[in-house]
Image 1 (cartoon, rainbow, N blue to C red):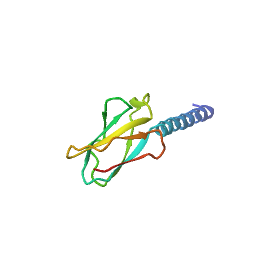
Image 2 (cartoon, rainbow, N blue to C red):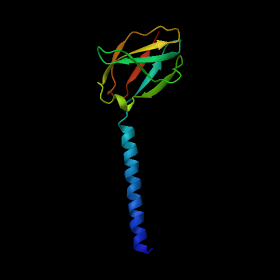
Image 3 (cartoon, helix red, strand yellow):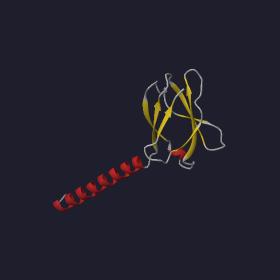
Image 4 (cartoon, rainbow, N blue to C red):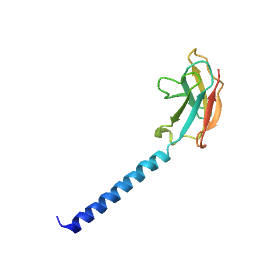
Length: 116
């Protein structure tokens, strides 16, 4: 392999790495994330979400959100076709539910606070 071929390959590799980095950061920028603050004394075991007039569906929060804790959640890309405006309510460890509230999930720095 001559010196010119090495430079061409290095240049192509550099371009590929830069483009790959752009793709990854662009995907991360397009995620819709929001914070959930549990201001109650009970663990949140479910968050239920619905478009206006639709049936509530569970939002994956893993093992739940402890009392007094704040977590950042990210929408699944499978919801990209849904409206930004959603109704949300929390289900607590004692099976009680918060009042439903309407939020715009396209809003930057969105914070949802739940109390009992």
